[in-house]
Length: 292
Length: 264
Image 1 (cartoon, chains in turn yellow, blue):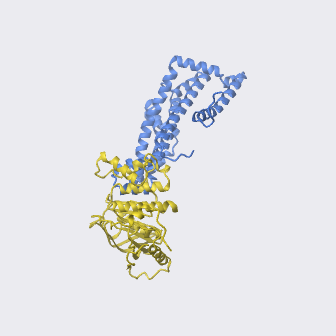
Image 2 (tube, chains in turn orange, blue):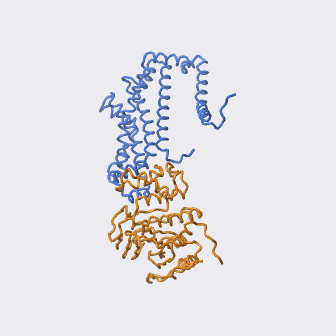
Image 3 (cartoon, one colour):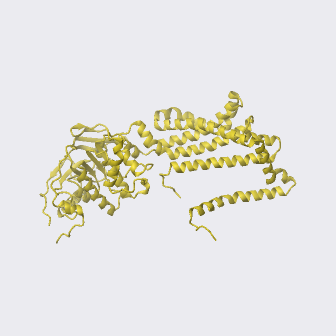
């Protein structure tokens, strides 16, 4: 079978691309992280001794059955919930509370409906030390970055789902966080828009070089974007397996490696639950594959 | 013929205006026909002509303007005090649960007493002067402002507060950029109700306590003098002014809430 020529300009450009430079910041390290909720008087473990390191500039995807605590994990990392045991460090510094170094994009765009798209993005700069005079320009640059120029004065309800989510991405990137967390950012989009925003996300990540941790239900999306894919198991939420995706960015969706990994992960996710005592194992997959 | 196309905005507006005028026109025609029957009817239904005459008389005298202004001043002074306190307290109880638990039971109980029920007490304390009138008007405006502002702040969605947290907003920034705008629809609803109640209370206290000037005073005076035409002039002005104020508030609302998806 011959692979058809890709119509994606980024893909064509990416063939000869040199490895991306490693940024100086954005190293996340999580040690022995556990989290429990009390539900109906009973304590339930949501996350059980999670260990995870993210290299500066790395894109890590997290997949897992619902209820495996992946969204909770992101809330802890971003600093919206301080009730946990274990430790989370960004660039060696223990996190406490939220910080402009850590951004997050939610499944719903969470733009403030009472502000225009432009005002929403500019508001993210409120507590940065960006000079007032430069803010307009920075906001305009980020609106252009997500291809929304011309919609500055639109209110969120006037934007389509994909546009609103792109605006939310711009709002999260405008502060140039060292680490960007993405909590099923494309989960609410239709399939076509989703593919489009995935490409956009990949392009932005390659440009911005923030470390990114994305939670998703979509294994294909996890593999397409992630340098590594963390497969989580539920009850209690823990890391079951870490899959390295050793392919350069930008990627070709048709890559046989991606498809093979997808089948593997899916069968793992749908398999009968394994013994919860089993250690999380790191599986290294074949070297960068030759593409036709 | 030079007619506007049916979908032209100006055309739509004049159609809407004309539709709204149908019912009042029919009411006037019916009224006039009753008045024209004479006899016992003439005592109950003053003819439109005599009402117009009374209006001209009151206007020439200058009392129509001064009465309207007096009622308006009372309404807005009382509204300013009552809604100001109500909004402040409602926002405060919506923000701080401790304060809510401290004062809300008392306020909820006091709210159950109808405004009329307070009048004897207020009469004994403050007499029947301006102060007691303002107190009644302010109390009428207080509760709707309080309840709606409280509900507006208390129901702000956590997902927006999360964003405020992620963006490191201070308490003041959170209030200004998230809580207040998110609560604005209900705050304005409360204000609209407060205004309606204040207007009712202003006319009501004027009728009951009677001194000085005001549209209610004029109605009361019309009754003692058995001048049906004067009463009708005062009622018409009251209705028209109340309508105009409400319209202005609706416009303000549409402007402040233009970010909302409109249902129509």
